[in-house]
Length: 186
Image (tube, rainbow, N blue to C red; front, side, top):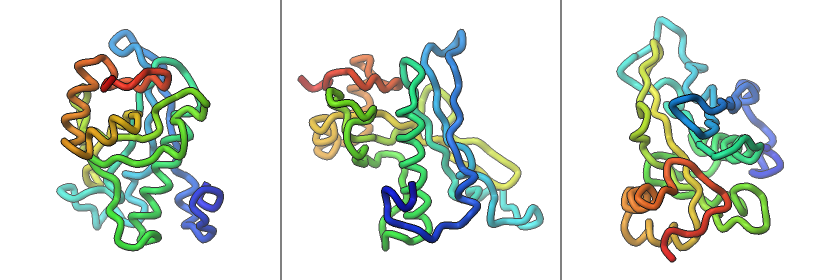
């Protein structure tokens, strides 16, 4: 993925151990949950050098919820994680690592279909689960990902991602990304 999507051949071999975990629905959550794993591991810090008040390595893990089991959320999170790693390690100059409020192109329809209008990903601070987790090595934030349309991205640019998330939530389009949904701004 680093080479195919981003043209980067020389990557740290530890990066190849990062991944995405899949969690089936529970009695408390009807959605499928996909979560990255490894971006908060203290790869570059020995235990005697841990600083619990600081972030552990990249200090994030990405999360997306979808209505049914699928491969596309895994691919979307892998792409975001690879991009975040490369930005965090200076491969794209002065770009900022991903954080709450950011919006990024999904590289086409989020689910890879011809009919999905969701072509961007917005990053929200979750309110329906803990946003920050404390580890011995430091803390990390969950960055909740939601698929959005171009029109919704434009709305978020004109107002804020928080305003868009509130609108999506009122319309039942957040926190779960349904790749087949229409824009909430119609």
